[in-house]
Image 1 (cartoon, rainbow, N blue to C red):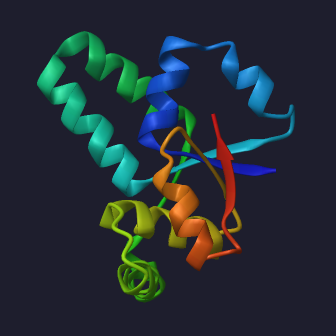
Image 2 (cartoon, one colour; image 1 turned 90 degrees about the vertical axis):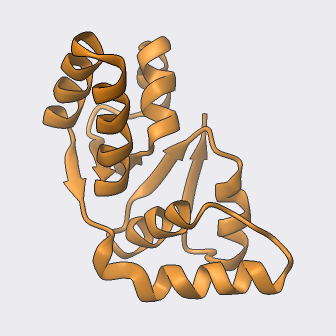
Amino acid sequence: MKSCLDTSAILKLKREPRLLETILGEDDQLFTTTITAYELLVGAHFYGKKEKEFVDRILDSLNIVGVEEHFHLASKETADLLKDGKRVNDLDTMIAASCVVNNLRIVTTDEDFKKIKEVLPALELSLI
């Protein structure tokens, strides 16, 4: 299985590394998105050298997929959610669209992905 870790999942796994063994199989491939990489790097630059070293190690160990080419799907998801009176982070909809297009399961702690799944049923979601 191919799994995409979002920022919230990576930060939770940093605090609880053994959790990784319970949510992933031996043959799982791990991915993240350019958005998550950006968010982690902002934190690394803010918090300093130790955090930067952690982020560099994590990003070096993950396959990074872009989200930019999926903005049409993401914009439709966002519009559908807004029509239903639901508001989610625009970046999350871009991450979700990238996961669907790349056949990746999103691993997250963010409950907003449940709302996104309502308008994008192909999204494979794993809340941790």
